[in-house]
Length: 276
Image 1 (cartoon, rainbow, N blue to C red):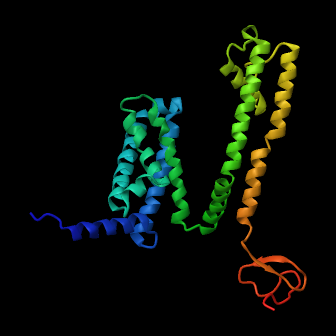
Image 2 (cartoon, rainbow, N blue to C red; image 1 turned 45 degrees about the vertical axis):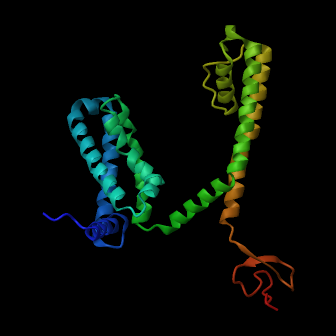
Image 3 (spheres, rainbow, N blue to C red; image 1 turned 90 degrees about the vertical axis):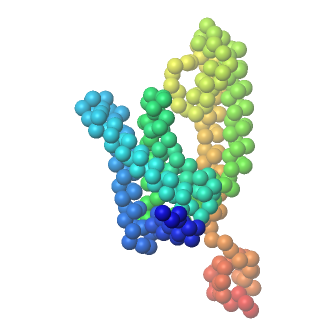
C-alpha cells in the first residue's frame, strides 16, 4: 500500500481548510450551520444537566449527549489544527484557545468531579456566527470597542492601581478602628469590606459599629460614588475617538475650518473648494 505523498497531504489540508474556514462554498456553509447547531445544543445540555430534577430524570441521556458533542468538537479541533496554515498561530489565537477549552473540561471531569459544567465556555463559539452570516457591520462595531479598550488600557490600568491603593488604605484604617471584636479580624478581610463598600455592592455581612468606623464607611461610600464613573468616562472618550472618521489636516481658506474627511474636495461647512 502506497504511503500518501507530500502533495496529497497538502491537497487534503487545503480541502479541509476550505471547508472549515470558507463560507463561500456549499460544504463550508453546511459545516458552519451544523457546527452552530451543535454548539447551541451542547450548551443547552450542560445547562439542563445542572438542574437537579432534570439530571435525575434524564441524567443518562445528558451524559451520552455531552460526550457525543465532546468527541465531535475534539475531531473538529484536530481538523482545524491539521489544516491550519500556521498551527501555532491558530493554537494561541482567541478561537483556538476557545476551541480547546470547549473540550478540555470533559476530559478533566474524569479526574475532577463537576469540572464538566465549565463546558458552558462553548457559548463563546457562537461568535463564529458573525463570520458565517458575514455580519460585517457588527464586526466593525466590535472593532471600535476593541480599539477603544486598547487605547484606554494604560489610563484604566493607572485608575485600577490607584483604586487598589485606596481600598488597601481604607481597609487598614477600618481594621485599626473596628478591630476583631466588630468582625474585622484581619486586614485582607477589611480590604474585602472596603471593596464591597466602595463599589456600592453592600453585602451587609460586615459593617462598622463604632461612630468613627461609620464615618470612615461614609467616606468610602462617597469616594466610591465619585470614582465609579471614571473608567466609563475614559472608555467612552476613547470610543468616541475611534468611531470618529479620520480627518485630513486641511484648513479651509474661506471659513477657516480645520480638518476635513479624507478625499474631500470641498469644505463641509461653507462649500469652498479646498484645493484653491
